[in-house]
Image (cartoon, rainbow, N blue to C red):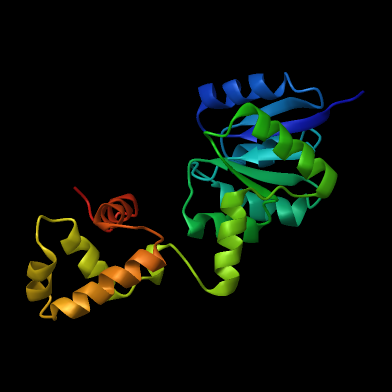
Length: 212
C-alpha cells in the first residue's frame, strides 16, 4: 500500500528530522521533504509534487506559518495543513484556522496522538484537538482567555497582584474600594478559569502582562 506523503515546515532542523523519523515509522505515512520556512516550501514545490499533509510550524523566519498557510489555501487547496507548534494562545490558533489549517497540535504531542491526527485528517479533512475546540467555542460565544479581552483596569489589577501587596493595598493604590477589588478578582477567576491568586499570577506572567 502506498503511503500518504507528508512535508514538515520547521526552522529547527534537528526537530524536523526527529519528527520525520517518528512519522516514517507510521504504517500509512512517509515524509517526502523538509523545509525551514514558507519561502523555502514555495521554492521546493516548483520541483516537487505537493504532499498530502503539511505539518506547519507557526513562528519561522522569512515567511511564517500563518502566511504560508494562507498561500497554500490559495494555491494548493487540496493540501491539508496541520499546525505543529509551541504556540497555544487563542489568537494564534484562530489565525491559523482562519488561514486554512485543518488541525492544530502542540509540539509536546505524543506519537499516538500525532498518528491519529494524520489519519483523521485523511479520513475527514480535519483534526480538531480539544485545544482547538475550546478556542472555536470561545470565539463563537464571545468568551476568550486572551489578554486582549481584559479591560485596562483588570490588566492594572493583575500587574499589582503579582507584587507582595495585599488586596487592601491594591485597592488603595488603584483608588478603589476593597469591595470593588474583590469584584475584579472574582470576575477574573471566572473569565480566566482560575481558582486563586496564584492562578492569576501565573496567567499574568504567561501572557506577559507582568514580567519578572
